[in-house]
Amino acid sequence: MNIYFASDFHLGVPDHDASLKREKLLVSWLDFIRQDASEIFLMGDVFDFWFEYNTVIPKGFARLFGKLAEITDSGIPVYLFRGNHDIWAFDYFSKELGVQLKREPITREWNGKRFFLAHGDGLGPGDNGYKFLKKVFEFRPNQWLFNWLHPDLGTRLALYFSRKSRYANIARDAKDIRENGNIKLSRERLYRFASEYRKTNEVDYFIFGHRHIPGLIPLEEGGHFVNLGDWITNYSYACFDGTKLGLFTFRNGRPEPLFQENNI
Image 1 (tube, helix red, strand yellow):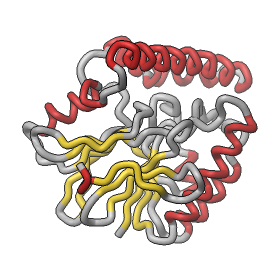
Image 2 (cartoon, rainbow, N blue to C red; image 1 turned 90 degrees about the vertical axis):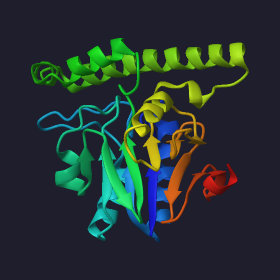
Image 3 (cartoon, rainbow, N blue to C red; image 1 turned 180 degrees about the vertical axis):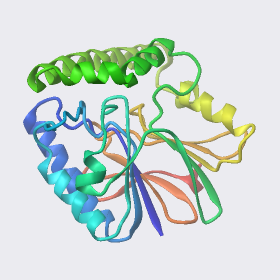
């Protein structure tokens, strides 16, 4: 019983060729894990931008869509969490690809182990500016207004702001490294959210995307905080085999361990 989790592929950037190379590696990974997967969770930001118009979806990603449909047709459940870059995913994935869309955090249990699953955006203390912006994006009248923009204009506008956000995060991480020598996940908002949540809820694993830093860290309150990393630099994913959880990379087209629960 292997359950797989991956996040933050950001397909579509920085350009077509780089994105296509990453997409092909992602499809190879899906082919590899389908051999023993009981469930597959894509934890958000699969695309750098996604908006479903009434009759139009973003161009590209044909290999990924075909593989997802093939996997779900074979009976393996695939779940997609909306991230902050694909917040405007609606019903295309469920109707056309058989992928189950998740809009909010969920809890699941396997073999007596309880999981808290979320993309992670907007959770934890602070970040009030983004939390307000997320409400703006999720406000139905605003989605209706954006729908009236020509797809080429809407996509270019969204990618512009996405690029600005990414550069801001890179600058923040660089500042953290200059000042502290590294980026400590234990200082992140999501870690603090998990730590606080664990005080009143029995959870064995908190699994998040959003921050592009792979990590598997024990919480003082019990359980583990898991950050999945990304598929821009780390090509990382998590696998739960029914007993323990590990983080791996598929950078070279084969699984290589990053963090193992029993090595902490």
